[in-house]
Picture 1 (cartoon, helix red, strand yellow):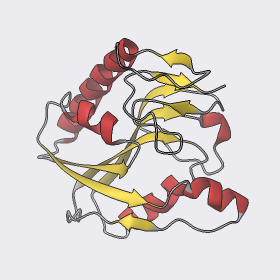
Picture 2 (picture 1 turned 30 degrees about the horizontal axis):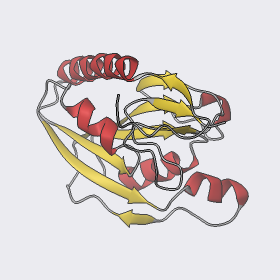
Picture 3 (picture 1 turned 90 degrees about the vertical axis):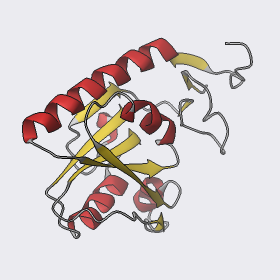
Picture 4 (picture 1 turned 180 degrees about the vertical axis):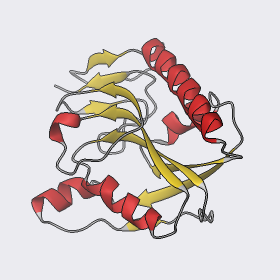
Length: 182
């Protein structure tokens, strides 16, 4: 697309049409799952900042009543925890009361599972009826803490990815395709 500023040395990994098809599939799977569960309305919580573009497209493909909220965490908490340089902290808490509600946590990418595990523990303290996870990208090979993902878009390797919400130094989130940086 004219105007896309592709990162220097960036290699296209997942084109926008493939992302779009994946989101349509995920929306259908989520709709069917929560209808079968008998959920009146679904609480969808996105982890900021990377998942906001994914969330916006995904919720338009879910044919079920939903409520949306956001959760902010300190940047790259997984790397900090893995390297012993700090712990995860929240920069924005959810405002919805999730007590006895069905919650879908939306992530852009799941890596080691450390940050996600922390978020799930925090949410479970609020006693939701259920918590499921939807991740656009799964780096399963790097998982340290087994965190079951109910809905997954793509499994990816260790490469550094940008685009479609993923950034490098706060740049490239707006790219509609996903690129690997060399």
